[in-house]
Length: 349
Image 1: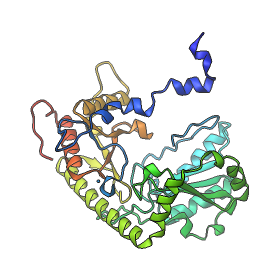
Image 2 (image 1 turned 45 degrees about the horizontal axis):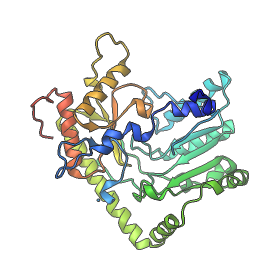
Image 3 (image 1 turned 180 degrees about the vertical axis):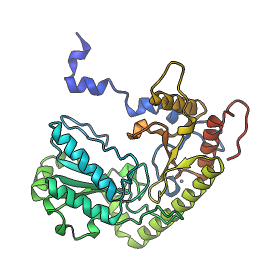
Image 4 (image 1 turned 120 degrees about the vertical axis):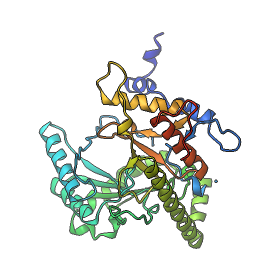
């Protein structure tokens, strides 16, 4: 029997893609530890809130239109205009846009959207009668940094949204995996005032119930307000310190990064000057692939721009919410690669 005929067309498409375990097999089998495994692989590419801890989306008949910003600041009003341009272009191409999705604060850029931009996003969605979905999963991981480009976080729920958009067209997502370092609990929520949407979701939520132990743990955490406040205060303090430390280390080695990052566990670093095309290649993305492989060969993993749908190759997401020693070792190994000091060279980060 032909094995390919066992599954549907969609099933065969999914089966042809490497799973998460396959992709991270070497990382999982050989993690770096400064004391017990100093020759292991440094993982500063996975967004985990490690200082406080010592969905896979399958699209079917649904597509995403990514917005190109060029020199425009996507977190200010100029960015809203780029979204409108994308909506108009997609409509002309015969595509029906049903929703605009914002990650606020942003992953991987670590920035927050300006309040006036959020208002304009609501007006834009109202104008075209499309849904505005705001993912605020990093909302409580925002901290102060000495960066003039940093924008203070304003939740979409802090506005009187009825002034700008129908309550049926605005929705907020949140989960416990990031701010509370509780990814294993697998609990999240959707805030919406759209009754029809709630009725539609209720027909499928019976297949997505969380386990009773998970709910009990989450309830205990959330209802102990004093403990939660202390937890989040300490988490933000540690993230701010680590952000400052990483910026200083990158500055020392002449590695630039996206300005204004004051949220999340990451910083968007610019390794474009060290992109070198393999012989015979003309595609810059091949250069990024080559650099990514050289980093992995030096046993350090950071998420490349291609994996994050970057507009151009050479940008990487560096996670700094690991143990301080792991972060320092990871940056040291990055510097070894870009400075050509892998073979016997030293680079004190």
